[in-house]
Amino acid sequence: MSSVVNIAAYKFVSLDALPELRARLLAQAGEAALKGTVLLAEEGINLFLAGAQAGIDAFLADLRADVRFADLEVKFSRSAQVPFRKLLVKIKREIIRMDHPTIRPEAGRAPGVDPRTLARWLAQGVDDDGRPVVMLDTRNAFEVDEGTFKDAIDWRIDRFTQFPAAVQAHRAELEGKTVVSFCTGGIRCEKAAIYMNEAGIPNVYQLDGGILKYFEETGGPGFDGKCFVFDERISLDPALAPSKD
Image 1 (cartoon, one colour):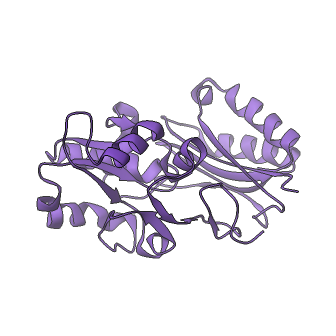
Image 2 (cartoon, rainbow, N blue to C red):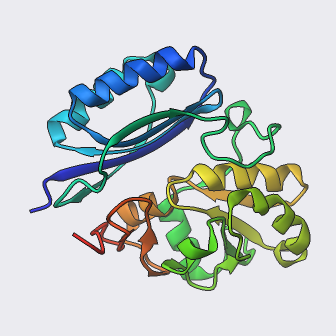
């Protein structure tokens, strides 16, 4: 029985007093008997945690009591075992490193497409304006190798900091099309879509909630293989079942 609840969430929001926030979240997650990782930076929060349902509920209630995280959107999945060995709460320069400090999602995110709308676009091959739809994988090459959308653009980057240069080198591929950037949970494709918009590439969207939300809401039509995740589950199939459970 898959009794362990796994959550993934992020939010771009200005944070200060990070050492104090780190201490508070470490105590709350520890009291809830959770394991996993929470990343904090001045630009926001990114977390992957697992534990019993009661512990997850208690931690999220405490977290959302902070007005900065009140509207935090969370993606859920289940597994038979906790896929993390310990609990870590870290302070970082960025919650997802791009090395482009002018990209500030809190100041205004790029247009998003929800999973059900994307599934419809993929089935019909064009968006609602009749433009061809192309999927752009913003993840690292080894993640893509586990699974991706059918015919997705894959620039074989080794780390996300290489993404801006890849856009400049390949932007001709995107002309005249509706581009949907995607990643595991939405955080990378959010920065990616903003970068492409600021680079003057029109008709760029981000997949809201990433692959995991797409699986959760649609069952994954148009996706080939599994979604790599950074924990001991290795990857999740479109039913959000671990490849190793």
